[in-house]
Length: 286
Image 1 (cartoon, rainbow, N blue to C red):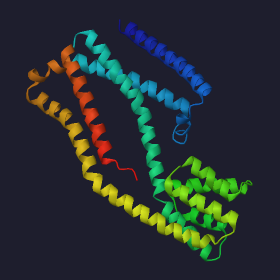
Image 2 (image 1 turned 90 degrees about the vertical axis):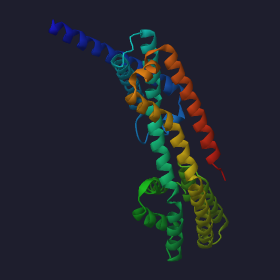
Image 3 (image 1 turned 120 degrees about the vertical axis):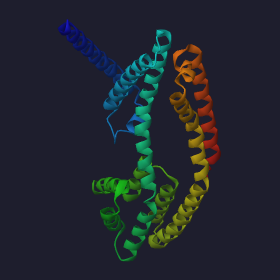
Image 4 (image 1 turned 30 degrees about the vertical axis):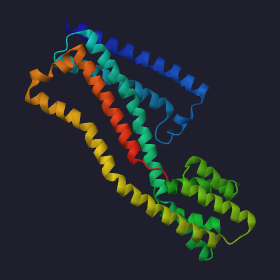
């Protein structure tokens, strides 16, 4: 009997694996036809095929885990257990993409935080007598982080015959931000017009430093609002967990009945709406 269970388990696992591979191949072909740029932006962290496979596996695993947990909590109606499990599976499917998107945004923020250091390094290098390409190479050796990776790409393109202004434009296309746009525009116009690039870079250092200081002050002023948004959003979940351990019989209908899950869904929607409004209030674009 145990051998039959093992055979059924192995057969089911093999069938799921083949099904996942077929779905992944179909979706990848569709992505290639559509040439979706949002997946290309994540290629630095994970290949599109691996990302898609990870999202599908995460959805299946989360759906199975939630189904088992509901059975453990006493949910016996399949009309409740299956839709809830599928809902959490869909959430996990998107959560994997959001995770890598967050990594991409963190890299972009780390890059932007080094623009001031990069501009100061260019200015100091050219004031000491180095050419623009030599100054970039000197700064790239010690600046570190994503900025060093992007400068290495820029220097590689420059050695292959691309002009520095065009290489800077390509770097701005990869990592768009306002400070870099100002720097690239200044370098492009100065190299074409023949002005003093050192003086322009010194003015850029002053401008970027003032913008950075203002952004930091603005971030510190809105930090309390962002924390309150997170605290208010997680408060209902924390209250549910606490009350469930205090009085399980009182809270069990929320996870064992249809009306209970509808109430959880409405509460989740309201919490997400409130969080979105609070984030919009505390996000000041300048």
